[in-house]
Length: 199
Image (tube, rainbow, N blue to C red; front, side, top):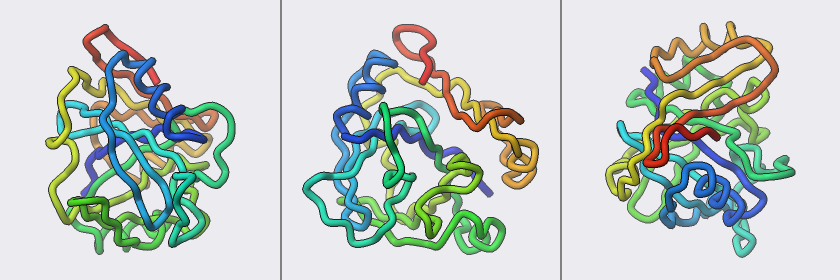
């Protein structure tokens, strides 16, 4: 029911989040756009296999229509870093019933893109932010619209004190995803034109 959709690097500014990705992977990102509902803006990087990497931050020029902000942006401090991951489903009603902890459905648009995102009431995903954000696309997916930069997700590592329960709860079978028990953390490895790189 769930498939990997994208990974999220959060920053206090979009410039910081974007720079962390570009410096780590050695490739340029593309401009994204603005999300009026939460008052954020982003930049995107094409990944192979229908995925993408997102840099996101609060837009200082925007007044959000809804609070708290998604992806825990209200609580973010320190340097920009990989904090979140997202999974898509073609069965949003079934997903909402199966994973109520994912939050309430929010209808979102950015330019030609239209999707439903499940956002927790407090703006932070369960499992210390490491439960994936769930979404369902109602338009074309962004990945095919992005310019390939020769990058591919090799592995996504998610650790949490309740890692075993998280893995059982999600039942997501993807060889790139490795969920383990340990301190709350997330990291990822990517194939790039410059070799294996990590965020």
